[in-house]
Structures are given as structure tokens and as C-alpha cells.
Image (cartoon, rainbow, N blue to C red; front, side, top):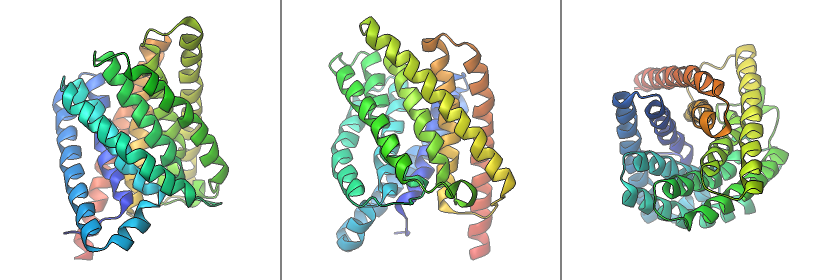
Length: 302
């Protein structure tokens, strides 16, 4: 079985969220192709880590305590959200149950091993939590039961708190020297905005509805500020070499685009849709570029 690091989970999350975004703009064929890639990679990685659990448990436990391990939860939620859009609500619900079961075990282990001056992967604790909120809200809107709505909101609020805790531990020097996962600093806010935009559509009483609308707009604005800041840092300090953490760059690009597309209607800000479409094609280009660099690097290594 091939050797894989937990950070490789970003390679599942990237095409998964691109599939969601492409569906939202009506590009169904490339959306399904991206979903197929994400699904195959998810099965491959799950098999690889299951083999590690059987053959080398100490190493598996050590990897499970790193923030990157939370990509298992986030990737499962992203796939579940896209599968729900296909009308496969039972399969999406199974993925939600799987992610919910993984979340406390992984999150407790990760938080217990937090330290100061951490890389961008520290924000995955927010991404994973908000992934649960997005999938639960998606299933609520798909008619799987209003009882899921409080659970979605119950994940959304702690997710924001986790972002603050992660930000306090983030090494800001990663902005100019990070290997790719520093982009999750903005992507975590983007998935928070996506969760809020989904929750807006749930029939809450007015105080909650207004609060969620503002939460969507504020988190999305902050995500776009991070986007500009991180892009400027990339142009100032170019890092063209391949690193597995570069997949964690593509995911925030796609998530920011998808958040804009999803928030346009619920927040009443129509201009966000056009912005999201532009950013989505940027994300698709980044995914293809990363794939090419990965292939060239692998060929060179051989």
C-alpha cells in the first residue's frame, strides 16, 4: 500500500468542493468528474490508513493527533454535501454519521496536542466542525428532518470559537513561508460562511435569521480579505515546488468561490455569484496546475 500522510486528505477535499461549485454554476459534467476523482481518492486514502492502523498502531495514533488528521472529517462532509445534491440523501446521511463519529475522537486528540506557533493546518479544527454544520444543514434543506437543524447550528457556533482558538496559535510567518496549508486560514472562514448561508434557508425565528445573515456576510468578507492577503504573499514570495500541503491551497480557493456562490441568494447580495464564478475558475486552474506539478515531480523522482 502506498505511503500517505494525513495532509493528503486535502487532495480529496479540493476536487470535492470544486464539484460542488461547478454544480452550482450548472457545469454538471466536470462537476461529476471532479466528484468521481474525490470519491476514488477518499476510498484509496481510507484503505491506506486502515492498513496503517492494523500494521503500525503507534504511528497511526501519532498521525491522528496532528491537525491534518481532521481532513478525514472535512473530506467526508464535503463528499456528503455533493452526494446530497445528487438526491442520494441516505448515502449522505451515512457520511454525516461517519464524520460525526470521527469528529470527537480526532478533535480531542488534536486539541490536546496544540501548541504555539502552528502551521495553517491548525485551522482544520474549524473546517471539520463547520463541515458537519454544512452537511447537516444541507440534509435539513433536502427534507431529511428538521431535527438536524439544531445540530447544524450546534456545530456552526463552536466552529467559530475554534477559529479564534486556532488563530491565536497560528504562526503568522507562515503567510510568507508556508508550504500551502497556510491558505486554510482563509478557507476556514469561507466554510463558516457557507455553513451560515445554508442555515439562513432554515426557517428560524427572526433574531437567528438576522444573526446568521450577518455571520455569513462577515465571515465571507474576512475570507476574501485573507484571499487577497495570501495571494499577495504568494506573489511576493514565490514557492513553485510541489508539497502535499499544496492541495490545502486548492481547497480554500474552491471553498471561497463556493461560499460566494452559495451566499449570493440567501444574503440578498447578487454580485457575490459573479465573483464566485470567477474565483471558481481560478480554483479549477490551481487544481490542474497542482496536478501537473505533482505528476512532473513524481516522474522526476522516479
